[in-house]
Amino acid sequence: MTGQLRDRLGFQGLIVTDALLMGGITQCGSPGEVCVRALAAGADMLLMPVDLPGAIAAIVAAVQSGQLPEARIQSALARVKAAKAKVARQPEAALTAADLATFDDPSSNATVAAILQASQRQHGRLPLSLPTLQPPRLNLVAVGNRFNCPGLDIAAPALAVPRRHGFETHLCEQAQLDCWQPPASQVLLQIFMRGDPFRGSASLSPAAQDLFKRLLTEGQLLAIAPMVVLI
Image 1 (cartoon, helix red, strand yellow):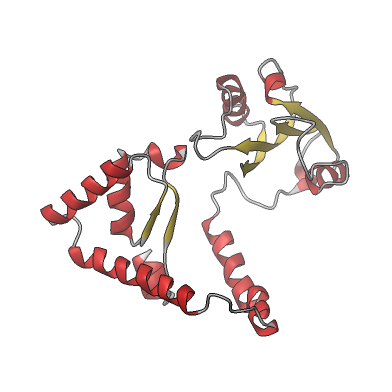
Image 2: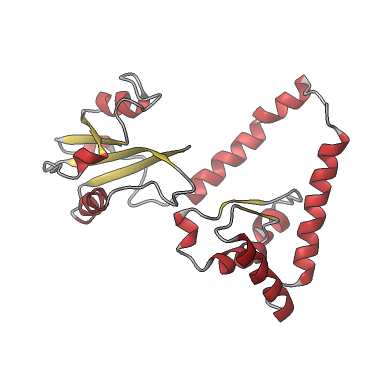
């Protein structure tokens, strides 16, 4: 964040972490270590650490030992104070048309697209070369609850686009995946799960995880599109 976001891109605003109690980060170290590493990487605010007293103690110890420079803490504190002061100065400021235009700035949109393109992790090359795919083609859509999945109707792109390209759709709840046996097909896997950051993961069952891993290791998985909605 310091080398790229601050130095290369010139961003001088506030950097806030995502929730530090989610499973993707808690596996990387102890709660205190995760917080120290986030600050060292350039974050200014730590969101929802697993153990707040432990995080504070770890940060103090890191500063006292020299692992984390005190200047790093002071720079983060200065940005937090500046952000709070900016809000306090404009408690009732209304958005203008010029303000709204900044949310759809073409150069910003191009930057976002470039970041997404450069940072995506791929198994193979995207977009898929559809003419080379051999039938049968299966669009496996895994959902937490078939009756509570807003936006996933028959016209939804997740269903309509694969259907136009000859994919047969299988819409399965996680409980069904526990006993679902995939046919000998090339599979596009889409996961629509409702997640809870306090739970630490999207709560895929072990059987569902084993199924997805098997599709990957057996070469049946064409692509995966996870969509986890936090509640």
